[in-house]
Length: 297
Image (cartoon, rainbow, N blue to C red; front, top):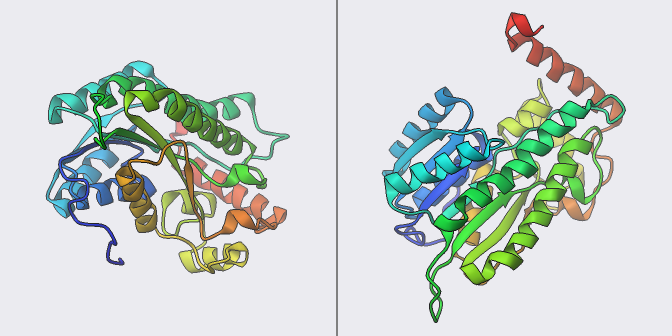
């Protein structure tokens, strides 16, 4: 892990709520917020066993308190309960990271309306639900000068900036998230709430990458995608976490989605051939079926 360019206490005293924080990029975002002085955090997701282990690990690594709250972001009531829990435990909320997401490989011609709607509900509707639930808690007193604002970081993607095989559903959902980021930044700026986004590119050793490419180790995956990345490598979860620290400390930045992908979005050739995507899709489905309860098969 590389040293951070930020002061270790640049987020001193702040409190974060991170959806999707039990694993992957959002786990590391929460870790970096705590490592840079955040007083505490609550991670949210649907799997309690994941959340419990992750919250204990984050607490141990950072020395700051990290709690968890089971929350399905598709349910506005559960979103409100998560925000209330955070405020009850820490007295306030300064940072909301919307990282809960759904994705799977599916050809548009065979993608079911339910499958499309599920991804839209988690990514787009879920992001709005959390933003709406956190609005009052994130509002800061209007004051002269450069007083800190509340900040929302919406985790996006780069799929929607071009086109990607068998990813019509998350592409549509993330395009909606980007639009929501800009709209809320405009409307909520006067309330001292900044709304920004991070669009991660291919990130090594994260569930989002391994889920869509089962059977490929990180080196094989990097060899597959690196051709279209000007900087010549995949990103790391730490780099996504440090991007979040930057956005949390940048008090004059709002409405912007920061692309962190080594320049891949500038040049999007057909990185992975369609036949390879089809084979990966079959492996994903086989893996999912192997772990599904027998009653569902």
